[in-house]
Image 1 (cartoon, rainbow, N blue to C red):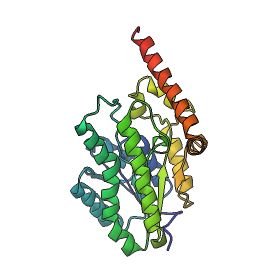
Image 2 (image 1 turned 45 degrees about the horizontal axis):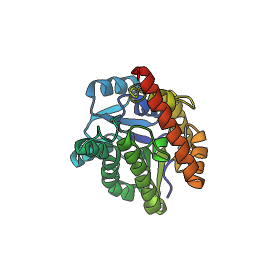
Image 3 (image 1 turned 135 degrees about the vertical axis):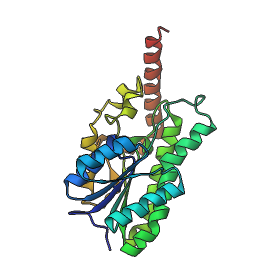
Image 4 (image 1 turned 90 degrees about the horizontal axis):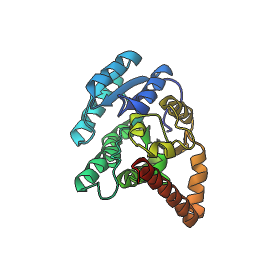
Length: 267
């Protein structure tokens, strides 16, 4: 049995208070879905829920208890969970020496283990329903890399890898798994990236609503990758086919970033 792909759905979106999560929740509600939105930020979450007619659940996905609380509340409200958007994520924006073990533990917890917790909590739901859809917000960084932020690059690669594993393991049980992998998106995270913002916006930083449009289109398919920036497919193909050329090109961008900072600092 395949997961529902079109028409009215029951949807859960994590990290929904702002950015991509808010845009996805808004689009899903506009398309007729019944939506549960979740975040740690209760004020913005409740504002969004009131605006789009969604049910808010303030929960901390950095714990098994928080994820189970969300899944239980969603099932109580919706009756079933057709689509679960594992969207919550963070970036620390720090280089190698500025990222200690505590930073790594924090970003691994949100960008990777939160997806693991959600899938674990949903496993019995999928079995009961005969399927479902699990959509991970990763990043083009999960297919390529990102400059200046090793923990983000590594955890987004891990998020894609976990989504791949889920697809391999559960697709014959009716579970569709997809990974959203945009480049620059006009969010607070991008605005906080400094000189990196210009490089990330090379192929145009999209408003979150454009990402939500791509997601809505992809829900009518079972395609694994959702690429709001289609050119990412070409970059990923080059990375796979000619890794040394690709690495040299990325190093060139790294040097441009360092030069821009030196100019800014008068060096």
